[in-house]
Length: 239
Length: 255
Image (cartoon, rainbow over all chains, first blue to last red; front, side, top):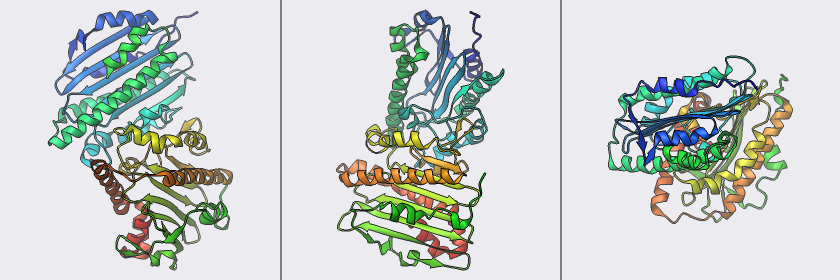
């Protein structure tokens, strides 16, 4: 069987992340990143890196490539009290297609908090409309994740029919990440105790939903072959 | 694409409310005054450009309903702007049932949703109680041609020009544009099914007992209503036809 050439998810995302003042982390939450990478690699090959930065609690970028599927994940969790959204990107690629999701998940109620929506969410509107033209564009299937989404998330289940489609599906991920990096400079601590409490409460709720979501993803075909202990650790590490 | 003549367009109220007996078993009475406005001028109206009605009701002897409104505005014998809204009273946290149904010769534009009154990311129990029961209907009706087109499911995009409006939607909206007559009828089925689910929930609803939660809910409800009443693009058309006062009345009854 011919070896599969997977889309360079990890490399492209890492390139985009270089726009942040990153500090590489060898351990995160008690996990040695290198050891986790070895356990993830039981499925084939794996890459995982973690970073810290000012205003950011953690950034985790991971990909696991097996014989029949590649899984890519990237999360950025803002530091407590900082008003940045949560970045999350999910990439599941097999020989026939790509399932993907990318978003800047709000950490406040964006119906009520218009300035936050204008600052962090609405600038992605034109790109969100542009990516609506991608084949297979569709609402995110996980109901609990969809309940936390921003109004500009992009998700798709794309059948790959010709060369170039995989890279086209990757474009929203690097594009949204670039927006996040642009927002980083303007990110600020919450101005009031009430807003800090809102950020704390919503960030905790969204992180819990995201942990559940990634756990379900890993329990499906995308987690095929991954060591169960690594599958259990990865959602915690990401969120 | 089939064009639909005005006379062949869907008789929204007749088909949904009358023929399907949407409110059978509910003791509805007309709502004569709403937020300080006499509603009677909305019950039937006619100008050289437009005619129609918005009929608001409450539930007799109950505080569960702030308003149930249905109505139609027929514009120049070309377009029908129809609406159905169920808003619970302030002691209840039921989502706002909202339906905009705008039919022209070329297409039907629909937005149908249970708009949540709390942030559903923070309150998963709200989502499970009031919204997740829609999951099956949402998955069924999102396949209506037009909402799904050439393998792309375009829900959550009809309000693309208005981010504030998208922020009001739940994660189970039926929204978009459909063209063919049989697909327009399928949309009517979706509206009826969503409405029945809401009315069933309303019958079982209990008043809120937590004051802090109630305050949070009312803050979001006020923000939601203010957005639509101040910024809905249909409001500008209503203002041109009927003037400021009636526009305020009509949009308040619809939202």
